[in-house]
Length: 284
Image 1 (cartoon, rainbow, N blue to C red):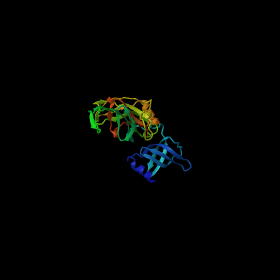
Image 2 (image 1 turned 90 degrees about the horizontal axis):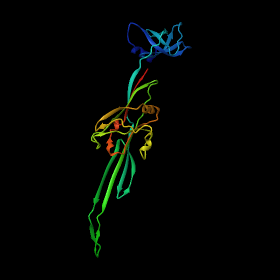
Image 3 (image 1 turned 90 degrees about the vertical axis):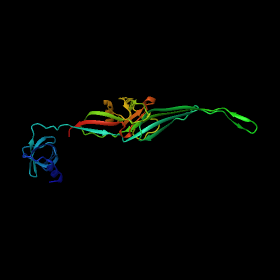
Image 4 (image 1 turned 180 degrees about the horizontal axis):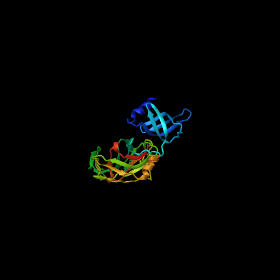
C-alpha cells in the first residue's frame, strides 16, 4: 500500500466499526479498482463487490479489513458535505501616492505631477504669503540710485491622491461570497482635520503609474464616501455588491483615494490602506 494510503488510514478515527462513507472519484474498470474520497482524504486501489458497478460521483459505503479496502455498494441517498466558511484578508501589494504640485511666484506657475511609493494621502495642502522688501539704494559712481521695494507673492498648492494595488486570490470552485468589507486605517497626527471622509474609487492600475492619478480612477466605481475617520482610527464598511463582482472579474485592480479639497486632507497607513476582507462559503 502507498505511503499516502497509509497516511489516510492513520488519520481515520479508531472505532469498533470499520465502515465508512465516501464518494467515488475515479474508476479503472480494466484494473478493477476505484478511488474513493473519505472524510480524511482519498484512498485509491479499492476493489468493489460484484453486485455493484462504481460510477464517479456515487456516495458509497466502504469497509476496511486490516490493509484491504472494499466498496460494499451505493448508498440510498447521497451525503452532502456541509459548507465551510472562510475569510481572506487582502492587503495592498503596493501603494503609490500621486502628488500634484502647483507653485506660483509673481503669477508664474510651475505645475508638476510626482509619484512616490509607500505613502497614501488625499486632499489639498496649501500655503500663501507675501514678502515686501524695503527701498534700497546704491551709489553708481555719480549719484544715488533708489530701488523700489519688491513684493513677492508666493502660493504653494499640493493635491494628493493614492492608489493601492490588490492581488485578488482565486476562491474555491463553487464558493459563495457572503460579505466583502473595506478596511481603511488613518494615521495619527497627520495634519488633517479631526474628522475626515475618505473619498474612494475603484481603479484599473496594472503597472507603475505616471502623470495624473485621475485616468486610473474608474468612472463607474466612485467617488464613494463610506464614512468618516478620526486620526488614528480604522473604519470597516460593507463594499457595494457591484464592486466585489468587478474585483473578482478583474475589472478593478484596487482602491484609490482622491480629493482636491483642503478639508479632505488625511494620510493613511500603507500596510492597512484599503484592505479587502472577503468572507465566503464553499463545499469541500
